Image 1 (tube, one colour):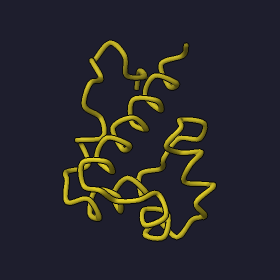
Image 2 (cartoon, helix red, strand yellow):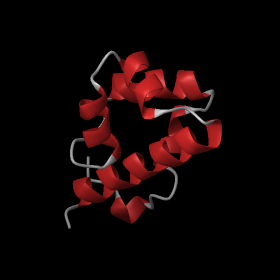
Image 3 (cartoon, rainbow, N blue to C red):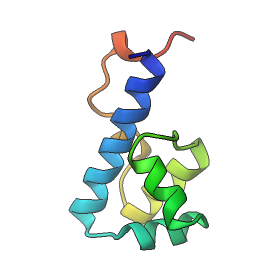
Length: 81
């Protein structure tokens, strides 16, 4: 698995966890991002990575800091700059 895959799956898992904690549906989240529910589903499954704007909007919707979506990543797992 590539480092970018690990990042994508970790972020997707953290978004799913926050949606569950805040009891926000995929339909509600996809509406707030102005994307289809199918497109949102591909993102939270890790098939397609979230972009920065989407993560910012989700953080605002969920009332969490953006860095919450990156929890669980170690320095060794993040892609090199």
